[in-house]
Length: 216
Ligand SMILES: *Cc1c(COP(=O)(O)O)cnc(C)c1O
Image (tube, rainbow, N blue to C red; front, side):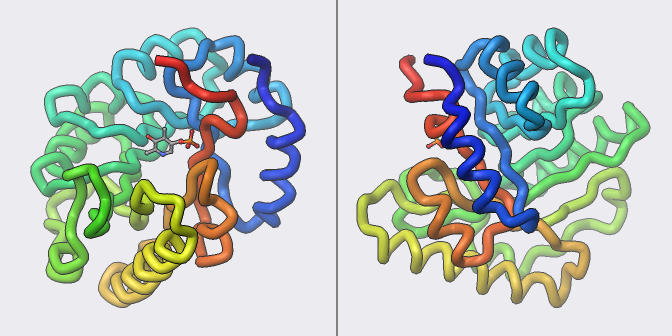
């Protein structure tokens, strides 16, 4: 399926120049990414390390690559030279490894901490309590923790989703007191991004609405 240009233009207009769209291109071919790139899209998100590395080598170098999947510590080294933002950091161990690789490549790697919402099916992420107690070690000087990433529960219940996004925004605002560098709240996907934007998201991650359904 070709890229949905109409959906793209609509989403861009909804961002109001206040939020960033990450186009999620996992399992989609490089041709589809290029088609969207030619419309002006620069931020793309991928979930799998090998796939991201392969695509990065084939595509324009000014694309900003977001890693949005579950990242294993032993694979950080493959994306460390070029990754723009790692969304799903779920442990201090991972943060430590990202810092180590960032030192190796002499760059600052930007990260978001993944928040685990109670009803959510994934087991990854920090709980609300863990985040409120979190101290990011001062010696991690080659990383910049820019904010939070979350996913709503897999549900058709719009009120439930809105409530979860509200909770995430509240947590984000609270954490900003001790982490004044926090500026990014990455919430919202194809089915719930309008709710996320209404509740204060400033980074949405959209796949199927732009590229069509993924057939695995
Ligand atoms: C796949 C994925 C998305 C995009 O999902 P769509 O429903 O296709 O928009 C967003 N965020 C994460 C973490 C994903 O894994």
